Image (tube, rainbow, N blue to C red):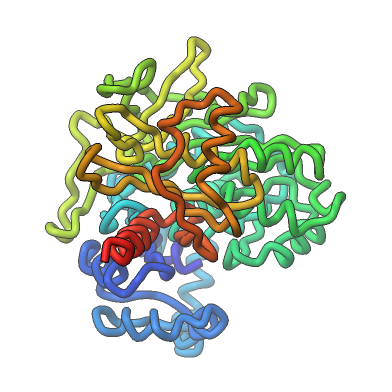
Length: 443
């Protein structure tokens, strides 16, 4: 309600990631030139976000929805009634190319940047998704993803409202048992999630708990084979994997029920174009660059607050390495920054993680590259698998004909892999942990 109310009055909502650290919170507020942050006392209380509240209060004015409600006058209520009957009387008419929302990059590899999306961008992406995947009036969409995440906002909130589909929002994806219970009780038919979270839901539920679902759509990170197998075995259901980036509002590609190719992220959304730029050391793939009506107005960089820098000629470089087969199905090989150079050879950190996932499917793993005097870089795997040994990875790779380059130089065990609020692995924190551990060993 707050998001749509702000839009109606020509304000631009900037969706703040309340799971970020203090430095990133303040940086985001400065970058988007935020003056007021709309929240609720109840939300802060339930989320135990008092420290976040104090941090934001240092750089912006906090507006609490309970106080706004209590302060409504008779005149305000009459205006509200008039607006519900004739919205054009009160609402501002915004040009479609004006900013509709500012979101922030996930911060997996550095300081978050602001992403300015126009009304046209968001509405175009909603139309693209509706053309790609069938929605019915009887559908009930369950969205446990946060609205500061573009997938959670566009697909999880705005799309069902515009399509006339019932939507149920859950405030956090971190309550698997409660989420499974709510899906069962609401007889939800569509679930939005990420690999990390949907694995937890699958384990928390009993056979039959998710029988009402006809679609489970996952984005934000690669869906592991182990996750697909678990869902297929326990619930007799296939997962549709898609691919998106905040800069594309966010959906770029997705599989379909009638054309689901596991291991790919499906085909491009309607009206989108894509090209691949060659990358040295990575054959039969390239850097994925996309264009379409859903591609952002531009970035707002931390060093130039408030200034939108548009993508050159409308093309956005995703920074992901991909291949596209003759039928148009896209396979994401990993982020370009997620490749390491070891002794002159290019090593995919995603492949290193895949090897670990094949050996320890019930655990989470993160591979990072750190400087190495002899070989330029070395790969270190961090896992939450108790008792994990590098020798086990070596043996698995040899038995399955996998290159020894996919075996990390070192392996570190940690109680839990750091995760961002959108479900992605927090590689910045993982790398800091590795550097700290290696520095201590070096001493």
